[in-house]
Length: 141
Ligand SMILES: O=C(CO)[C@H](O)[C@H](O)COP(=O)(O)O
Image (cartoon, rainbow, N blue to C red; front, side, top):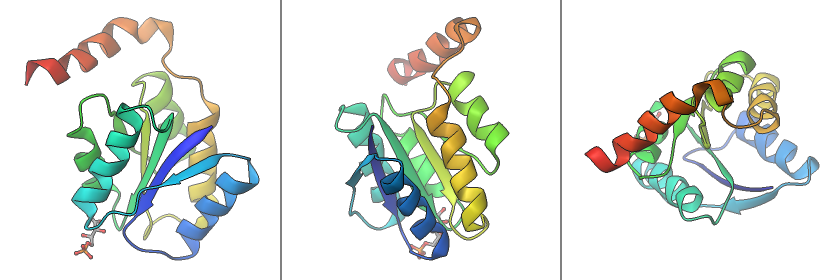
C-alpha cells in the first residue's frame, strides 16, 4: 500500500513506525514539509489527491497535524493512542490519515496502533449513513 508519511521531529518512535512500514512492504511517500500545519496538510493532500491510499502524521502531540490534515477536503484524520481507537477510526469514521504523538507513544505502542489502523478495513456498512454525513461536511463549509 502507498502510505504518505510526515513527522516534525524524529526519535525512536518515528524510526519504529518507518521501520514497520518498510518491513511490511508498504511504499512510503515522504512529505517533507514543515512546520506542522504544512506537513499535516501535505499528507492530507497526498491522500485526498490519490497519491497515497492512507497517511500517517506525527508531531509532538498528534493533534496539530491531525487538525491540519482535516482542513483538506477528502482527508479524514484521527488521533489514536491505542489499537482500539485506531481500529474504530477506520471502522466507524473511515479515517484515512492516522495521527500519533511522537512524544507520548513508546515505539512498540506506536507500531501496534499503526498496525491496527492499516489492518482494519474501512467503514463498517452500519456506519455508512454517518460517514456520508461526515463527508458531506466538506462541502457544507
Ligand atoms: O505537537 C505539535 C503540534 O500539535 C508540534 O509538534 C509541537 O507544537 C512543536 O512544534 P514546533 O517545534 O514547530 O513549535
